Image 1 (cartoon, rainbow, N blue to C red):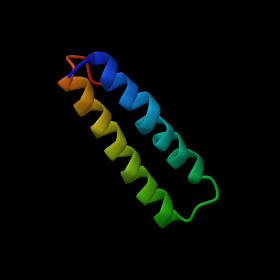
Image 2: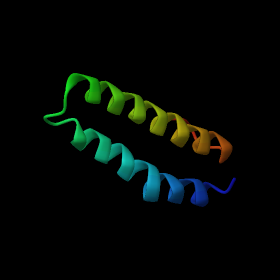
Image 3: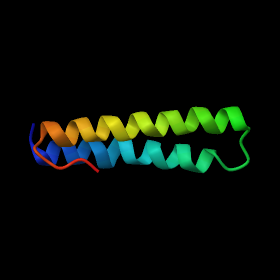
Image 4: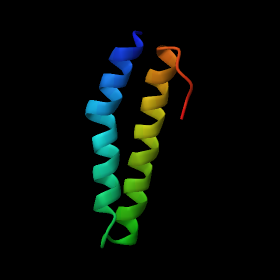
Length: 59
């Protein structure tokens, strides 16, 4: 995969969703926070899969 394509996907779709999940934690119930943390873990995993596919180091 092209590095630029991977970074575009990460920066355009994955990072904003991760940030939205982070912002949604404020004032949320404990169960909701747990679910949001799991979503963030998935977003991180997905971004790292794109990085690996494009020859970039994981973050």
